[in-house]
Length: 461
Image 1 (cartoon, rainbow, N blue to C red):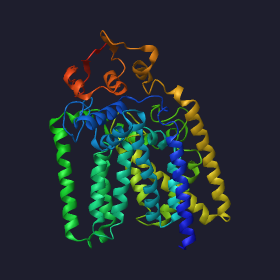
Image 2 (cartoon, rainbow, N blue to C red):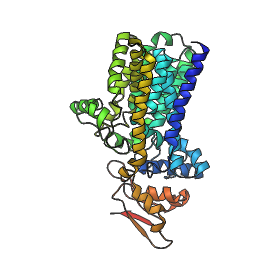
Image 3 (cartoon, rainbow, N blue to C red):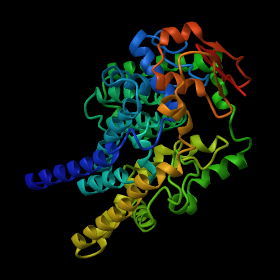
Image 4 (cartoon, helix red, strand yellow):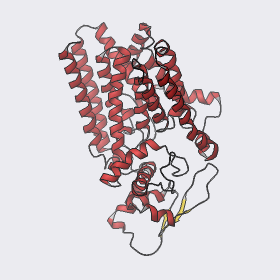
């Protein structure tokens, strides 16, 4: 490739990244209208770590955060700590790491697509599609742990395929370990992904020196120890209780993620995952995806088949649970959907003359779809989703018209989730004081806990 084309490709990638940042940072603290309980928990535990080095339960720099009893993973929480330290405890501090991780996802999707396909054009289209994807949009500007998991997952794959230098395999291993300590879904698909990559890269792996391989294996083994302890001794098994009961249920859940209604029309029903009336993908991808799949299959290249293979893995974590289809738990499929769509555009360029006109038309069509999605997100979604983002709790603790006063007990219903965490988050309650005052209800059969009272606050029916 000549220098001019290389410069142009970097400029185009920069434009995609700027578009991404503008649409994610705009009103990030106001839309969605409030933090939901997991965001509040992440933020307050990061705040507690920043202030005291301990989480809300008093554990010193924990690997697994007990939180409500479901044990949150550490990577995203620790990434929030410096922002809480600098900007204070608020929605911006909780959400900005997700924007940065998502920025990394776009860059890594570009690099991975370029490496697999051998085409910068496929890389650029892949990054463009994922940056404006309705599947990705809400997750990439709110405090979802999955964004950190997905970024490190893609980094692990990219480094594994870049094993021309011996230590790439070592840093790939580190990335995969960070993945499984970011989001639970990746604990299911990472081992299978590594096995697939070993098969694909077997001939290259035989040339790697012994020391990086030994260190990589050692790190993988050591990383399983805290996970084993969690599920063996600390009620972490509660996460595995909500599973599909039969193979038939699993298959039904799995294939629901490929249902055209879910993908192109109605999307995820959870308004924290998708806007009402939008599919997970745009309708034009209904044309590009089959073209991309056809081109990939006809290529008969094991590297070009990788996006399809890794896409197939994506819905597995969601399929074993009772809630399906589930956009968040199946998020690992998204970059590979984008790569296949991008391959579809590349195939059109190969098969059709005047490809520049076709490319421009595709860009304009997708930008029009994205503009409609973004404007709906700004103007309709905040009101539409106010209940799902638990705005009432924000109002209780921040609205001047509902002054809590300075005396007497304050009784708050716990019928709607975990109200105590919103009190801690919005009032920036002193972590040490909270740990000394808190009275918790008995842990239920699933391992979850609720707070009965602290300070002047009491929670119950």
